[in-house]
Amino acid sequence: MKKIHVGFLLSYDYDKLKKSIPPVYKEADAIFIAMDYKNRTWSGETFIVDPAFFEWLEVFDVDNKIQLYKDDFYDPNLIAIENDNRERHMLSLKMGVGNWLVQIDSDEYFVDFANYVKDLRRFDSYLDNPEKKNIQIAAYLINLYKYTDNGVLFIKEPTRGIIATNYPNYQVARNTRKRIVYTQNILLHESIARDEAELVLKLDNWGHNIEVQDKAAFLEKWRTTNKSNYKERENFFYIEPEKWKHLEFCEGNTIEEIRKNINLKGIMPSKFFIAKKNFGQYFKHLFK
Image (cartoon, rainbow, N blue to C red; front, side, top):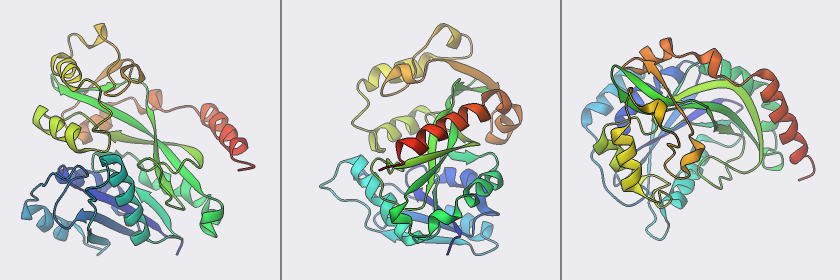
């Protein structure tokens, strides 16, 4: 026990796992990939997985760390976000309570997973009787908005990403609504930076599918925003637009190029900011 167990969800964008698994492979003690046994999304749509993906997985897994976990993850009586919670809970139980339960989405790419693991290890004592002292370890997501003109538009302000917990009583996706510990770690999140067909598929099948109020207006803004006009626009989030206020541009057509070119030091929240957030979280949950 007290190992670093990393979980991924395999769905319609499964091919992105080829980019999200490698950054964590070395530091993970085990990796679990959850896959619905009928290839269904949280909305009940079916998808096809190219057998070549499993061939890649077998070749890549040189240390035999990866387990494919197939189960019945779709309940037609639940809405998408409830199926999201349910699958994440089932996956974490498979990963084993008593270990660090790290869940990374297929379109999230750690910049320095080894550093995140060091931060997790500072809280190993919370893996003893985790139900009584539920804790979450967060990082920050740089949300990529759209590939355009030999680069990518991304959201100027990073957002919180709850990545790991010691006890998986998920309430909304990965959030257990218990104490959060913030860390200076970054993931590049491809989010809605996809081609239009892939984006529409995501909007229809992810956990937030009923929360997007005006999909047509959102898509039109996304479709027409580019390197030439992004500075003239604002409010880009798909649910509450003002949550993604402004965009920035970074050169690079691949995740590796973006990682090299983006100004991570300028984006990362300061140690003082994170300490203040953690101070508030400690006292907020002190007597709960």
